[in-house]
Length: 232
Ligand code: GRF
Image (cartoon, rainbow, N blue to C red):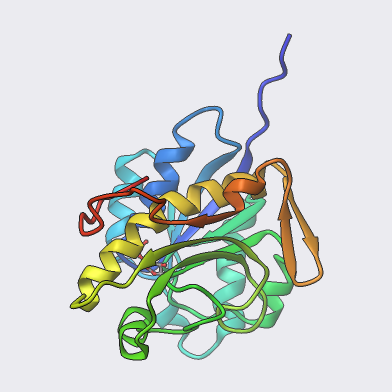
């Protein structure tokens, strides 16, 4: 008899809207998906994503970062109490707007993943779409990576590229990238949760899914680039 899949208990950390969280919840609604979203944790009570998580019946927790003021260690200890209390094995940052300490990142090494709205190592930090437009790049995109202590640093799991079109506004470009984030993050988290990621120096190798490891979008012949929900 086939063994039931043991799904990796995963927490999604958010600070706001939670559209990437929603994409992960949607993927994890499939019992064959290798990660179970066992907790959505926010550092802000007013994060809109919390409502979406509750509506989906997922356990939520709030550790208000502003209560801890500058004591990042105490803030992270409170978060880790929630993570351990829910038996969390893997943590996915999804628009979580707090920089984590080296201690936290080291304790969760290779079990902590982030999505960033640029083709890293280009444009780490904030305002990536405006900076991409100002720099005049022709390709922009998003990156899912393992987290290391530097800001938006760590081995890259997957990237998706989108074209920058003449006359793009920041919000048009952001929407084009976001549509790809919603495809990329569930795929990359699945690779990690199913143990298919191997580290080789600063790079990762994805077992048996090489072709999907680096996504270039649009594929030749792809239409409707300006449609925010455009998939492949
Ligand atoms: C996304 O663009 C993500 O890449 C970045 O923050 C944004 C969060 O959006 N880290 P959402 O909350 O997932 O909608």
